[in-house]
Length: 230
Image (cartoon, rainbow, N blue to C red; front, side, top):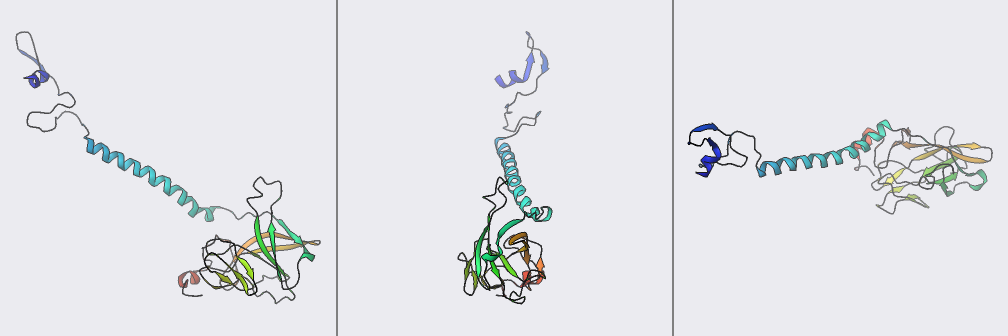
């Protein structure tokens, strides 16, 4: 009776005046959902909420990943010239570890410090990977081309203590997981001082390539065969 009263408006004599729509939450006697409104069940609400949260989380993850992927494409390889040291600090055939510090005017100068190994070459043919005009000095980065760990100098070349990467005295990969030779700095002599003016990557044959992050191949064939090759 209560359900009929809620559904039908009667006058004082009991005559039907008008039918009213079901109130939200009304359920007919047969147990079927009331018609007349798009009511959302608890299950539907939870499903929609889960999909919405998943979409937001996916976007939060995808945006940084896409930014990292596109950074090498749209980002430039700006390099601020930095002093390496005096020419007389370096001797023939011996690598010297040098910290390259950007100008003091840079607010992040400490963070941007880099380390290089510098060797003075006794002859024009001492460095087999040197570019034309770069034969007198060899300036290699200490960043391993596997995951970016700092390499250490040894009598046979360079070794990475993190995962066993090995390079010869010219920085060419001879073993382990690195994907390419050590990066190199372009240098120029300014009076009695040596300056680094650029940074570039090397292909497996020693030719110059556009600078890339550690772990990125510089030539297609090497990428297909690695790590089958040493």
